[in-house]
Length: 89
Image 1 (tube, rainbow, N blue to C red):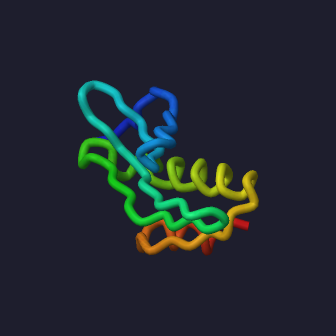
Image 2: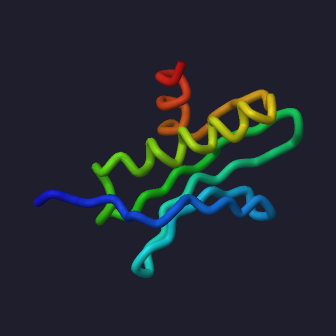
């Protein structure tokens, strides 16, 4: 069975330290802790129905781009976010 990623845009909830995608009552998210100039991406969650669609990678790359644009010192205590961070030039 082929899974399809949601088409909803990534929302940034800066007051909650979260990037998220919400569609059809489901939410995927990337959570971070910001203590400028440091940021830690500490949790990535993708609902089972969306796993394997590349959505987690999309969220992490979006968060990394946002942090890099702000010249933040990036760490990723979430294993998945760390994996993507190490693979991203």
